[in-house]
Image 1 (cartoon, rainbow, N blue to C red):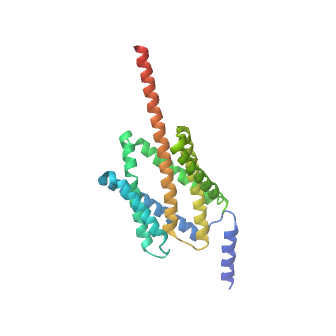
Image 2: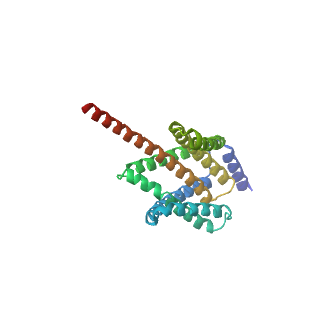
Image 3: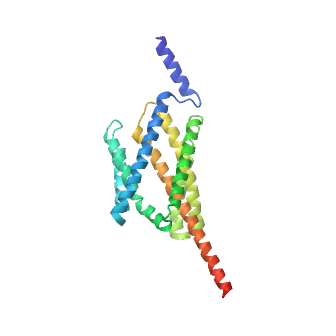
Length: 249
């Protein structure tokens, strides 16, 4: 009886304390991060498959990713099919982004832009995710409401900019605000995973998919930002060359 009483006291005390995370939850987080790393590796392999499929690969990958997510949501937590759907979603996500990566490589054959976008997204993801783990529990849950509101506003703003305004400055605002919103989702989803795992929901594939979506979105936003900066640099160089030629003649 005393052992059960001590266990109950330690578990309730750890859950009520600000930053304490129990050992099972820490083990669960490690498994989630390892699964996330495996998903990234599968997505990288999927991008290579998309190169062989050609222009239709992105459409096929997008449809496959949407189908995999839809089936994943309606699969029970204890089902083994969730792991197969998780792998298929990772593969189709890589195929869907293959055309985007090919465009990057055509613009920058060295691959430095892709490396910068990928490394920056990983560093931002790790920084915000680890800060959510180390900070006081439930302290970042309110960020989810702000991030969702920001994405909703950006969706309407992007539609208005596409059909009516057509301003490049608004597009830049969409990129940077969207980047901050998805960084906020990293903190929110990480703390939600901690709280759900503390409540006994050790859903490794489901939690890994949430973090993968956040990392995927960060990479897309950063890639667009780096690509936009590269275009601006090229335009500046062309303008300087044109001015020099005018002065010479």
